[in-house]
Every structure is written in structure tokens, then in C-alpha cells.
Image 1 (cartoon, each protein chain N blue to C red):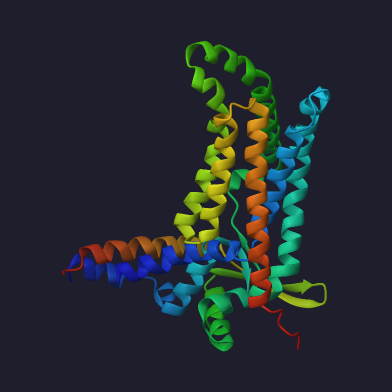
Image 2 (cartoon, rainbow over the protein chains, first blue to last red):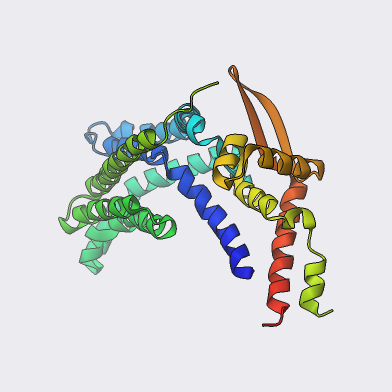
Length: 216
Length: 103
């Protein structure tokens, strides 16, 4: 009986998230975000003010707009086919002030990394030369590892392939000893492209296997 | 009566019914869901699902809100705070009961 109960509860949670990712929309939106973030980093360094302000504005704008667009897409595409469901959000995230504080902190952290990172890299170059090139991977590899974790958790092979592409993207720049900004940009773009491709294929498959019910 | 049996005796019968347990398990990770989602995930018939939702609503374990999405009727269902507490309590009791039952 304990096994059955455990299966009902564990399966319900896993089943919920499997259904949530079934239409590919989360990957598409995250992929767009990742791609946009990577594209910003590839902008020419003559636009230094762009790096100071635009990423912050982008983060603030996208974290307030993107969820609305995402849920609107879910409502239009998936909900009529599989039914409406929304995940529980952690209580701290529900408060608007906390959201804004989180986004501002992330923006400040990103800019600090951009400013301080090269100086740290210079110092590390004397002490631990390989780390001077490799530190961007410390920021980008976790994204790939998350994809692997999702593959293990939900059994969907497409997360494995996203993880592989993201990992290659995360390690390529440091291995080729690219400047940190370029290395991080490549990792974000690789991850973004992988997610968009995976999400697009998944969405197409979802639309074919879940025809819109005829309204009576 | 042994401890394991006593624990079983105290189980919430409303939650213990398999169909209602499945409904509550499906709603537990969700903020809210609609009738179609529960219908597809639970495998219950429409009548069965309606009936069990009615009983859960009567007990105050679920909240059911009826409205419209544009012109399409839309029923939103969520576990109430009392429902979440009852579900957590049921899980804990069941776990304890099974651990104490003789092999």
C-alpha cells in the first residue's frame, strides 16, 4: 500500500511537470530569452553604455512581460487541447516587490560580473592560468546540468540533447581561450538555439497528437 | 488493535477513496486546474469526476469557480487550504500506518 501511495503522489508530481513541458512552449520561451541574452553580449564594445543599462532593462522587461506572453500562449495553444492547469508558485515569488528585487539583483550581479570578471581573470592568470580562461564555464555549465537533471527527472530525451549542446557551448569558449564575454555569449546562444529547436519540434508533435476538440 | 491498525482506523475516509485521492494528488502540485485537465489525467468519467468533486467541495477541500473564457464556459478547481492540510495529514497517517503494519 505504501508503494501504491508513494506512486500516486510521486507520479502526480512528475506527471504534472511532464504535462507542463509536453507542448514545448517553456523551452521555446526560455530559448528566446537565452538567445536574446547571448545576442546582447555579442554587441560591439563601443556601445559600453549598452552593457551597463540594456541588460538590466531587458531583464526587468522580460521577466514582467515574458510570463504574461507565455501564459497567453498556453491559454491559446495548449489549454483547449489538454485542459487548463497552472503550477503553484513559491509564496516569495508571488509578491511583486520580491520579483522586482530579484530581477534588479540579477541585473546588478550580471553587470558586476562583466566589470569585475576580467580583472579577476587577470589576477588569476598569474596564479592559476587555466582558471583565468575557464571561469566563464562556472557560470554557464550549471544551465547544461539542469537540462541533464530534467532528463533524469522526467525521462524526456530531448532534455538530454539540450544539455549536451548547452555543455558543448559552455565549454567551447573557455577551451578555445575566448574572452569571457564571448564565451558566455556562445554558451547562451547555443543553449537558446537548442531549446528553440527542441521546443519547436515538440510543439509540432504536440499539435499533431492533440487536435483541438470540436466545440459543441 | 495494533498501532498500525489504529492509524488506519483514523484515516480521512473522504480522501481515502481512490478516485478522490487521485483528484487531490493531481491538484496538489497545481495552483488550479480545470475540469478537462482532471478528466484527462484521472481517467474518470465525467459523471464520476463531477460527483467526487461535489463531495470534496461539500467538505471544503476544493474550491470550484465557474466563469467564462471569452464565450467559453470555464470551471477552475483548486485545493483549498483545508484540502491541502487534509491531504498532507492523510499522507503522513498512511505512511505511519503502513510502517507499523505487521509483515
